[in-house]
Image 1 (cartoon, one colour):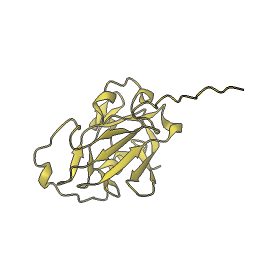
Image 2 (cartoon, one colour; image 1 turned 60 degrees about the horizontal axis):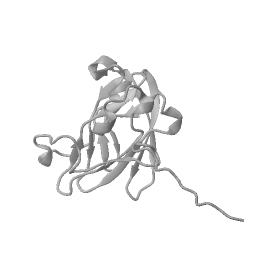
Image 3 (tube, one colour; image 1 turned 180 degrees about the vertical axis):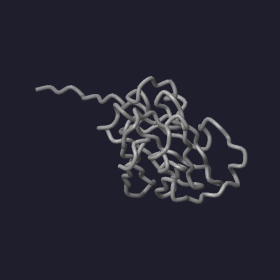
Length: 165
């Protein structure tokens, strides 16, 4: 009896099995004053471990055209200095929601073509912003999973212009 070696294709970058990786050196922008910006979450912010998405909770009762168009909505992520966290969208929601933080995902025409997992690593010496956003067929509620490096994942359901979830 002979056996042939099995090969496994690498998972697509930006997938749950192979998160897109953004760090201090490969992110697409330097924000003036970022090296002195505080990391102070407010009540409207989504803040889990070292990751903060400003004002995201306020989107529940906001107008979608205030944040973007064509289902693509801009919002940055900030990660505490020297820390790492992964933001992901569960597989059951890939047809209706995606992440647009990596340059490679910005040309997505549908949420399914966008990234669904991104690992952010901040600069060692300051809290670090990452520009980008979400591709969501709104209005709807979408669960996001945030996993701080070395920590347990936290799932938060976010309303994308759909009222209370």
